[in-house]
Image 1 (cartoon, rainbow, N blue to C red):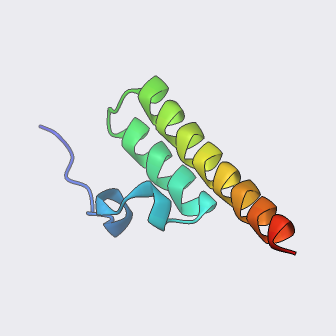
Image 2 (tube, helix red, strand yellow):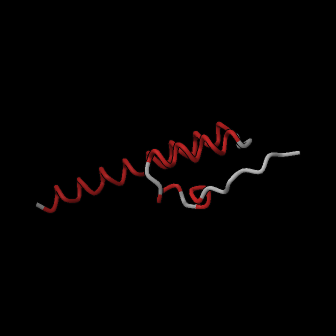
Length: 66
């Protein structure tokens, strides 16, 4: 019989809406519940990379406007 676990709201939210710690916690929880670790790591890395590129782009746009 499978264990019933408490539903976590972070599991339903897009990764971009969570902070880094919450994203990592949600990924670890999904891995513990049987999700593919490689896929979780890939999704987590992509989200963090997208955020870094977005911050860099915003900084460059501000810099070039001056």
